[in-house]
Length: 501
Length: 96
Image (cartoon, rainbow over all chains, first blue to last red; front, side, top):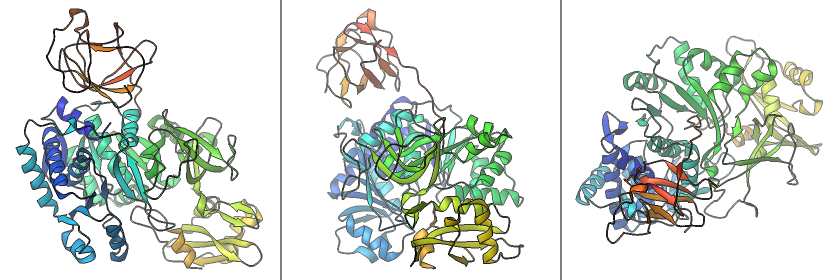
């Protein structure tokens, strides 16, 4: 079982169908498969242990992913936005690697590590030339054990140094075979992919779209106007966004940006907390689109739970608070994934009780280069907090590591932030643990005032919390800031917030 | 035979990947399928000549065996002489 089968099947079924569009160039499944076979030969000749990408999305990310798979070598897309010191550390951890993309930067940061570096153009041209030479050969014939590593992804490291998460061919193939029907896409279907190649959603988008034979429209650098423009130009039918991106698109549309978006049938989102008012606004702005909320982690090969289009519309239309609350849910687990909520002692909790989310299934790797994080029975502790409602819908409640432990009482930042964000004078808010001589930890909140409103006094903020939550949630320290720190994918950097206190 | 094994028809172009392995002989076009390259191409049994379709899953009545067709051909699949059926897909919304 090797992920190269995905591209091989698409090329076998319809070699001349367009599979990928990037920067105006159109690639058929046949041409992509040929380039991937050529890339495998090129990779093999370098005798490197990893194939890394240090570049924005392009045809090279697809060719490198499948080429590495055929060659049986891990593919490691790197975050090009990392600071030099952080990137240099990662380059050291994967040496010697074939690195595709920013050659000057690799030469500057990691010379002498034995890396073999090619520009994007050099890699693609080389892969195409070798692929054409190998005509008649079939790279997919080479059977790799399913246990071979397909992809290594460095986690975003919002709480600690990045860990190298390992996804084996068996994990990714189980995810694709369990969630996507081969060639199910109609000929006009096209998916706009704007997440970066080093994000699990970027990998999953390539695999899912090619297996469904849904044409991929790559948008290398996300920008709301470019996103709207590409939908109109290529008549995109599907798109995946992280909440920050959707917020920026809606901001532009509310500011008067117009685009022909009637082709859009499906918008999936995930990878971060979606504010309720944002998804409500999106449902109103895209009345013809089905919305899907996907919850997943790098370590679980992408999606493990989803809230589908009908569930979104039902919640959006409903006046019943309980039904509307479901808009804030990430839906139900996939049929192929088991999911439990457990307490700190590892006991399974009933519906309604908040605890840590555990998942199990063939797509769940739960493995890092350094160690496996699966327990003896194969369960992966996600470190995400959450609860299930009576109908099995999953609600997230922040990272387990972000829980504030005040005098032995566990406080989830999310419940405090929800109250603060409900106030019109507060544009953004974060609750974090601050040291307390009396309680060990206490609540600190950082709030961003909304423009055009009077800045709230500390006592007003305390009163807001006190009126809605238990007194232990009332913040001991309050900071008013201009903005909160987020990474480029819209994840709040809580360790940076903590440093402000 | 274990999940992930690739089997080839000896009478047509059909190739399958084993998703769920069970007991019994898997055949295509009436002839047992093989791992690796088949030697000589035999004749399709007309009783098993409805063809296979790429991307479809094939199961027996007890769902003890599941095969994914990765290359289409003219023969049809069987387990212990009983024809396999196409498994109904339960579509999920696209999430990436």
